[in-house]
Length: 604
Image (tube, rainbow, N blue to C red; front, side, top):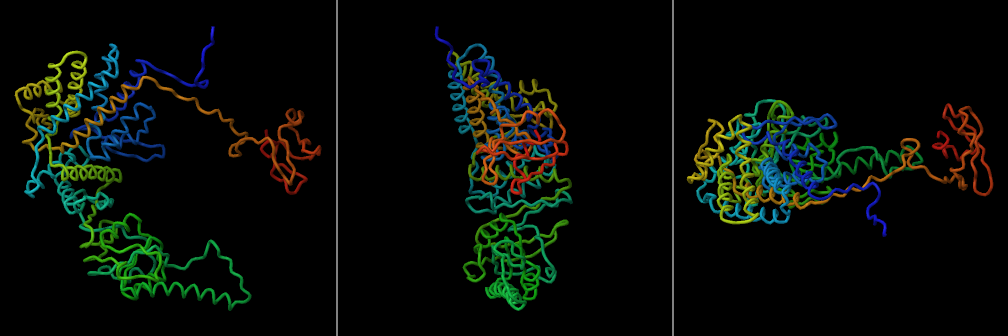
């Protein structure tokens, strides 16, 4: 008989078949459990402490899953779709995770009963295609012509997103700020033109929106207090030049024969600096910004000439200033033209809380805004920033896509009812699978009820009855433990959020179901070094032109710990004698050029 054919390396883990699919589904359920209680206005927050002791407080699904550092290969697909949802539309990260996990949970019994995964995948894709068509059919379009209606729509969408965040108590206040910020951008709605700065201290209501560029005051030298802090229509120059005298670290060799020559070199350095400063003054600029330091001499020089300067400006703030005010970043001070200078209506330095801010308003080129957030704890301000990021993304999507649907589980219940009715019109295994998809969609209203402490069974029965009689926008009423028309209650969400969540969740579920085998290669067997930090042991070392064989150790050296003489064989039939103290670990050698060779082996 022929022997077995071995294809994989020894130690390779290989699991396959139905049990492997079930194992992957179970892993995805564990991931979903981590974010399940964060869904909705009554969702809980998670406190996560990383390996360095940094704490993160959040109820954003994508943030939580990123911080958890999931290592299971199949479960990481849920982390990836949450990240995708966050980057694509900003909100719905927990929704997409729960939907994918619930679809897999409902499919698990069918897989155990022997339904082929490909039949399941085909049916799930049919179901999601029907669901997306239904969303397009029933979604409500808001006309862009009426600015009041459009603004009201955007504020409702922002408040729906913020209602499940840590800033829910001030959702009306922040919704107006977010809508104002997005509405001030140009038609492309560039996200990088919205800056968010955090100032610890004060209340949430002290947060503000600056119609322009604002960044924290940078490190300054003596003489900065003498500079003006406000200009009208100033010219702005942005540099990538160091304007200070400092000792050279590279190419700094200078050979002189007397003190006078050294003094000439020092005078030349000062002359170069002053020439740079003179060229900047001649350009007519009143505000000087640089990515590199601006020293005390330059600071005092500009102050004497009624100019403002700021060095070490962060690169992202400098880029935003360039886009808003115009100009270019210059690497030289000797060729500054008017086309390289920017301008704005007003520049001023203002005090906000315990921080000083440089503020540019009335920027002519590109519309830009800066959100300045206030709050107590650092973790709270960071979560507030994440919440406003989600709201900004939702408002941007709502501006680009006018279709909205009702939230609070209303759209999921309507899709569930639609798919359940459709499944009754077909035969075979597809009927079962589309029915499981319909049941999986009910996880959103059910979890909203559970997180609020409601009787989810009773609420879902009421919702099924209402949707069966044509109440397509009825969802969970969080405030009264009842059901209500969430479209009339202004609980609105952009349709693109639900479309993206359904698509991503279904594709992730299909991916998990299609995985019938997992092959895990063994870890490489790397021989640990004899001494930490010394690297892998070498068989030969070269010293003074001699190649030394390190493998032939004298047998007597392994027996006695007392100081003794050891021998190492040298190619060419020569011997080098070496004296050292085993107990002290202090090797000495008669070869002056070989003080460190073989030290790793002498301690073995």
